[in-house]
Structure formats: C-alpha cells, structure tokens
Image 1 (cartoon, helix red, strand yellow):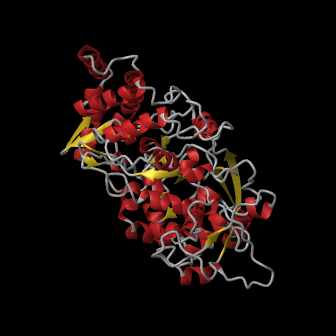
Image 2 (image 1 turned 90 degrees about the vertical axis):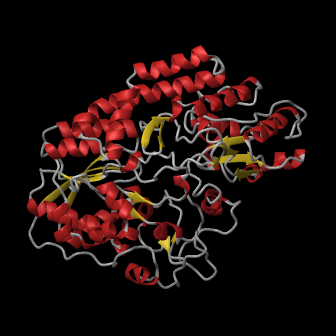
Image 3 (image 1 turned 90 degrees about the horizontal axis):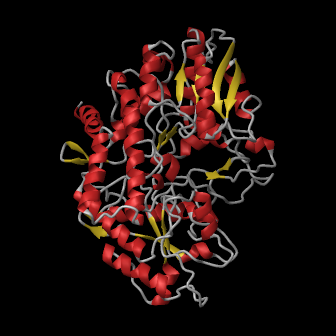
Length: 554
C-alpha cells in the first residue's frame, strides 16, 4: 500500500499519553482497549513461524518483549522474509518438517494460507479450529467478527469452522486498483479537455503523441505506458465490458456475472471489442511497446527519465507506480486521476476486495491446550485498540504521535486519531519496535481513515489524501457483472483441479490479450478470435466455470 511520510517527533517537554487514553478519545477500533485476562497455566516456550523485514528481528523486537512480560511467556520466532516465493518455500518446508511451530503469523502477500490449504490442513489435523478458543478467550476478536460481517464471511468455512484468521483491511484506495493517471499539464498545454469516452481518449493520446506536449521539440512522448503489474488493460476495457483483468495474480480475474450465471468475460463480444480498440491504439503508436513485457521497476525508470517528462498516462493503483514522488522538478504534480470512461455499461470501475481470502494466522496441533489459549490471548490483545496501535506502529513518540491542533484526518469527517511517524531506519527502537504489517489484523475504515494526513495532496506527506480523493472518482462504479470470488469457498475435492485450471486459463488469457493488442493475433479476424475461444475450451474453461458456479450457487 502507499507509504506515508512526514517528520514529527515528540519534544521532551511534550506530555506522553497512554494508548488507553488514545482508545478512549478516538474511533479507531470497535472494541475496548483492554484484553482478555491472561491464562495462569504455564505454556513454556511458544514457537511462531512469521515473516519479517530485513532490518527487523522479531525475537528481540520490543513489542515481542512486552508481550512476553505481559503474558508471562517465552516467544521464539522462526522467520522468513516478505518476499512471496521465498516465504512460500520456507512455509512449505516448515509444514513438511514434522516439527511444526505452535502458530503461523504471516502477512497476506508473503505466503498466507489459502482457503484450500486451510481445509486440507484442518482435515489432516495439522491446524486446529479456533471457534471455541475465540469464544472462551478472545472477546476482541469476537467483537470484530460481530461488528464487520465481511470479516466474518471472509473468515468462516461454509460449515462455520474458523480454521484461521485473515487480515481485514479496509484499504479504500486499494479497492479500486485500476485508476488512470493522466498528464493534466499536457492537457492544459494542448487546450484539451479530460476525455470521457474511449474515442475521446484515443484522440487525446494521439495529440500527446503528435503535438509535442512536453515542449522539447522532439517526438519522444509516450502517450500510454503499462507493465506486467499493473496492466493497462482493465481501465480501458471497462469501457467495453466489466473486468478485473490483471496478470500474475493467480485469481479468477477473467470471470464475471451475467445475472446469476458465471461467465468468462474474456470470451465475450465486449472483450473482443475492447481488444479491437486497444489494437487500434497500438497500431497508432499510442501504447508503449514495452507495456506487456516490462516489470514495474522498468516502467518507473521511464517515468523518472532524466530526459524529462515523457509519459502521458498510466493505469495503476497509485501514481508512485509510474514515478518517484517528490522529485525536485515536481513532475508528479503534472498528473491527475481520470474518471472511468463512459462506455457500454456507463462509467465502470474495477473493484477488488482489499482483504485477501485465506488466513495469515493459524494455530497448529503442535500446541497443547495451554499454548493454544495463550496464543489466542496474544492475538486478541492485538485486536484491541491498545494492542493494535502498539503492535503496528510501536511506541508513542517513536512510531506514532497523538494529533496536534489543526491536524486533519484522512477522511475529514472523522476525528483525527493518531499520526503515523515515518520509520527511522537508523533507530532500532523504531524499526524493531513493532510488528508492522503482521499486526494489521483488523484495519477498519475508521481505523485507517481517522489517521492524520497532510492537507496538501501534492506533497509526499499528503500522498495518502491524494489517493483518497482520487478513489472517490471510482467508488461505487463497479457493475453487477463483478464476480465476488473472494467470498466463495471451493470444496477440497475440487481445489487442486481448480488451481491447475486457474493457472492454465488465466495465463492463456494474459498471453492472448497481449498478442491481440500488439497485433500478433488479429482481433478483427473471426477465425483468430474463434481459435482463441476454442483454445480456452480446450484448457477446461467449461469445467472452470462449473466449479465456480457451484461455489457461487452455494
């Protein structure tokens, strides 16, 4: 997610206020700051498998030490990194070792447990159900599940079993990942209006290519760029058919709904029309040729080019994907968010639930009853206001501060709650004073949006507010075709087959889309289009739809 940055330290003369006081005066959480009373039995040493940042040491982390004292327990971490492939491999080795930790505490992007894994490991007795443990020892977790129906739905298997806890993250700007950032300075220079339709968008991009909007006398402008992540396809395609298309996510992003019927959006006539339009843009030289092959770092190097500002627009969650914010030439101030294009379904914007289905927290069968209880009590404390702030941000005055007079919450309608002090990587009390992303267990809208953010959206410090205001252009513009796959559980007997189908079909769609756009295949050729559709069928698209339809109907 977007990183906020602003310098603030408490002066020695400034009085420090307790986290309990913070909970009493803010609406950051849904439950009381206190935690359940700690169990009196001695659990010995609790082992936890977790991800940590490179400069962090969870075993010496000051929050870990506080928990050990608070709950009269020794905690020993087995650690891996935040990098997904390395974390996945380390977790699989841990599970197969025969020497399980007592619990896993992960982050969503670093190998959390999938729903299929939760069911499989639950059926095998590797992980234990949490229902009774939560009912008897975790009032804060219970309150969170009751207060947020979406969290409860994301957490429970179809039979009601809680095999693990996902992180609930009401990341407003993450919910609409396919925004479009257009160079407003170029629009103004050329006397152009913000485009509202696909045809107007084409004309604007053509003007960017041919009319030297950066004023250097060279035809070096790149009207539109993209990367493998994020893809430029969804924003434009939504003018023709609603979609969640993005490459490399391992999710059923090609799917949509026609009424209550699950269908392949990427096999519909609307998709073909969108490909024809994108191919037209490609043939006109309006799309960066590297858009379907370059990674995000390469795309950003183009946005940061020493030659000057070269890019007219980019589709992505935030502008920082295109260029480094806060550069001396202030090039990031040239860009503004563009509303969704008005097309076949009106103004349509791709929505994705920002909370990932699965679980970041599970308790294993290696933990005896005393350990299970203690582990859940610790997690319950992190769900409290006091524990949440301490775990995620660190100590007051080091990782966070109370708001000052004149401070404004990210959502101006909310009372300011806290200021997130930028991390000082030279200060161990800061970078090793909290659990960071691992503690983002229950991030409600109130918790996130009541935090202080600078009011000047064109500063680095006001970057989160810039995203907040940009997202308002897209909010609520998802259509009835949106397929809420995140709320669906796939039976264990279908999960392995579905995993293979997802990989094969979605990879094929990504490759074919790039080929149709770039002219390797001709989207105007009926035979080539039919060959593509037949190819999806050959990969099992009918079975793919059948499995998801059954889950949706259930």
